[in-house]
Length: 476
Image (cartoon, rainbow, N blue to C red; front, side, top):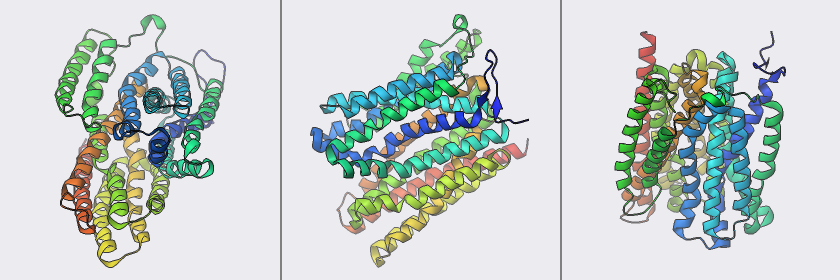
């Protein structure tokens, strides 16, 4: 029996899992490139539109916030109303918003379009996890998540190169606009391929569709209140954390009562009582709290502390990204049988390497070590991060019912987004606090070393939770 092909109830068509996965992952890469490629475009956008510091910050923050608030509601809507339909809807919103960004005449219009870009990406991204969970089983599912990790790694490596190439080929303006215009034909092709190759089925009939609108509103506002303080400079921003915490608690209570009344909650609280999903969500949150900020402070240290050019800073992480992509595929092959041990050893490798990078930075500053040594030292970080992606995704979704796959994937991605926002604010804060006495190479190193210690502590905490998960599972 060839498990590559399958049929769905109510349709006489035969579907190809490999083609479905290609459509999903190409689209996912498109949304991920919007994060990794935009950093290179900010100077060109500033020159073209004369953006303020606040407007420039929101080019990044608006997209991230919009994704964060859409992931879980859109994932649940896909579970109920049909994932393929939501996938195409998200692609359409994303394509139109990308066109709007490229045509933006001023910073306000650009940032509004960036928010809609985030909405589009937030609508279709959780459908990727949901459809992998729905149409792939066993080792095939683990391999699919491994390829998903490869796409994440490739996006990190390709994004800055692609956007930089557009600026070189077309000039700063319209080079940055072309970078966004490229999304339009890719999204259009993905929409056509989706109509042709994805199964358009839904879990519930329209008559029984229960989207829990009040629960959705509560969670959207809670995520917005929690993420905004770490992405804004307004003096009142920290008060939002109190509101976010209250909303989160009331949302959990609401979801519990909603389910007890026999209705369909947006996110079943029982998901968090599932050992695999609960542990892996916590592991992922702690990992992203630290690891996502490492390259941010590394770039600042190399450029501002040691005077390394932006080109070399971009190239120094390329071997890391390649190693991450390779290990994501490798992990996908072994995540089902050995995922828990992979999680522990991957995180332990990341902790040890983070501390090693501090030593390499010291050698570069005091003994003129060449930059390629830093590039080599970053490779184990890539090995660990790539292994973790597939292993954690596979283990976290082991016991999640396919009917809740989109919502569960949305929760996991939302936790990662929130952790990234908090981690960036916290770790860059440590970096600048340790460097506040001056801007000599020694001060930049102090800031870098201090911030990497915090990274190691966060990833180390994730490793301890992963070790606990491994031991608990072995004792069952």
